[in-house]
Image (tube, rainbow, N blue to C red; front, side):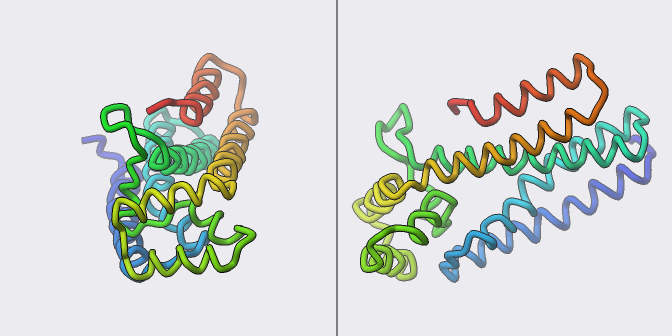
Length: 200
């Protein structure tokens, strides 16, 4: 409808990259890949790419300069990382209607940042190996899922994920601060803060 080939190109490319990200995530879960770089690659191809496409298209549709389009794209990408890491943290906490951690990601074999960190840094190697075995064997009983959640929390997984999330928020705001001061810039700064502070 825009008739803008740049926008059409971004949207069509987005479809390809999102599909690749989904396949990568399914492969990672199926093969029980426990690797932070792989986890970040999935986020980059899914949430980060989606939001960067949105912010890039917004800039193009407002006839922004090439430099401003690039900045908006970068901002959206960093925002995407923040959003997804926050979503992954939620999986380790109680859902209001059931009163216990959801653990949905773990049940699907998705090992997200809090658990990845705990498995890599926990002082007890035997304990880490025990939990890695559970993941590799896909023994996702309610008891095992709750044990994995507790293990991640007790070994600094939540704090590490929050730290990484805030690093991306800071990068997003750094990009915004290179733009002219305006109400729009202030709103985007507030949006970045909201994404990491939201409760649902």
